[in-house]
Image 1 (cartoon, rainbow, N blue to C red):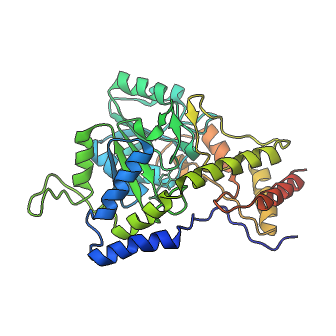
Image 2: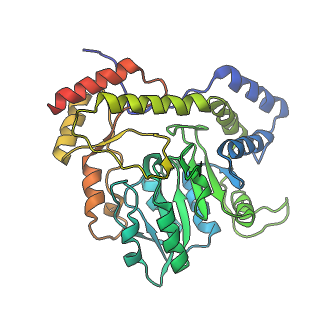
Image 3: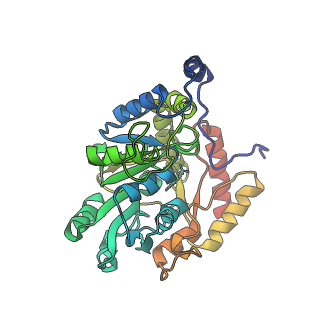
Length: 361
Ligand SMILES: *Cc1c(COP(=O)(O)O)cnc(C)c1O
């Protein structure tokens, strides 16, 4: 038995030589934050890589959601998914709006067929997550939003590199948000981005992330500190220089798990026909909570750590009010994400798969 500990995820480690080059620039300039040259360059390179026109880098993926909600002036009720990281829901509540949960379908994203029955005169927006980097039914959601005059925000925290209809998935909705946290596929340790549909909205985000400052002595509206620093931009640019290797290794690793685990009765999220997912996570759904917990414990006995992503279903948080949502609650209780990170080796994957097969037999 291997004594090696394998965690569910590990951050991509930026190349020190490349990073040091950027840090020398920062030290020479002694300009550490406040929309510095590296932050501007990071914004530019992200926009170019993702082929996006209106992108602003912010402090993290959560402030990106909060600024998105503020920039669109949302109030009242926001229809949202119960199957996501807690920040999707907590941002809505933090901004003084009420999350109204709609159950998911077998893509693990919000079920568009159930959205209309949740709309009432207080509804102002739909905030949906492209969970695990797999697209929501964007066309159906936009049709509903158009028919009812609703704004759309996508929490695209998992979606670096995901495409929908041949375009970056970040180009959809009124606003899409990205997380550049260390655990995400591409990162700047802490960081995030707001992608806006229009230049006007993009400008509002620019003002809002910097206290509303419009020049040193003028303010345009209320803002917050949503800035990111030259240090984070330096790491972000360094990681971005390895983006091809990061994205392609992830596809290879997922394909390898697919092959190694092919004979097991595991359910996986159904990928939308128009989506090319980045496969940022490797979620597997077991037949029951009991089985999922048994497998998790067995793997932990061998120092392999999976994670219950996402648990609990967000409609069960103590600070929200919601009816039961059977699909989300069932998936939440019986899903595990398997270890997946840049330097996970083929040998590790074979070992994990063998243990999983043994535990399930
Ligand atoms: C990571 C994540 C966030 C929060 O991003 P941070 O950069 O950690 O603030 C929001 N939503 C989802 C779905 C996430 O996975």
